[in-house]
Image (cartoon, rainbow, N blue to C red; front, side, top):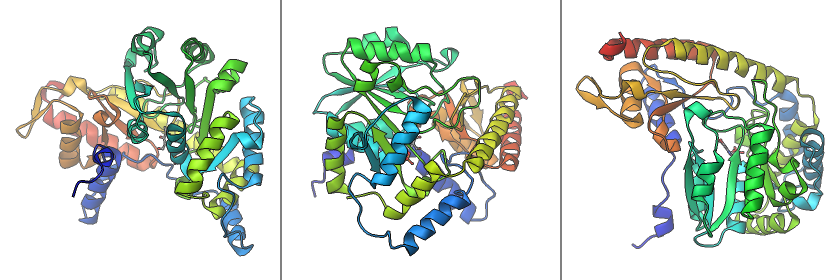
Length: 401
Ligand SMILES: Cc1ncc(COP(=O)(O)O)c(C=O)c1O
């Protein structure tokens, strides 16, 4: 049967494929350490769990308004005002089934066939696929480790065309942990203004920042930036609520209305119970969140120091999110048990086979000299996993024994 060409062009998520392979090995009794996951290993805080239970008991189990309950929109507006210096009315806010649905809604709402979206490489795996599902064209702009994986204006100017519609700014960044400072965000906002582009600001890792940088929303920089930006955020990463599936977006009333119309026909409303849980997340106590961030900070510090002490691999210190990009390019050209290691896929497969450590090959993010590991796993796993990586390199890579 002649099935959808668009659907056939969509790549399955490499990150999920690696997790599936690691889980399969685990189910066979093999002791695999997984560094692939993109979600906090902490449980959702108790006050949020209670709010969900109460919502069920109180019968808040019916359809809600398609774009979300007014109480949660109010809480989101209050959050934006208090934390990001951004004023939005309720009609400028949509609640969706995860930030991912906000992204899907937005691309559907603003892109016409052939419209181009500028995205930095390395990029989060779902951006290109979601853009293509909306008939848009992802245009990749390379960044370098020596520049902390930050976009340069020269490269952006080279990539922009008459068809460019949008620039995507993801800070803190998945997979690099890069956090853009005010001067850099101003440069990006000026670029967007010059070329009359929509700015998509994916700020889902906002709370997970460990260095001296503070999170600044690009929308807060000027009246112009405010008008052309759609900010996307959610509770998944910041409140250990990945499974609850609540994200939100804020922007011009016109765009949010289109996004809400699309959502009303695809999923109706996001889960009513999860919306009440998210209301508690945004308005209740935040001690559990603070403790989680502190733990991530400890793990990040240990991980980066340890990786840079291992001969043959290196990393730069991520400023946010919970991932480290390990540069593996020095290992290329070596053979492990007869298999040539010459890219991120061959390295990741070899590491899984010989060291029982699962990492995500950089090619999933558009870069082949790296693998991504996540520190959203216990300190014990981190120490153990890095011991294994070190032993594997010493054993199989003559140059680094
Ligand atoms: C950069 C980025 N944006 C958005 C999302 C989607 O988050 P949600 O769980 O809210 O759909 C993720 C999840 O991994 C992410 O890494």
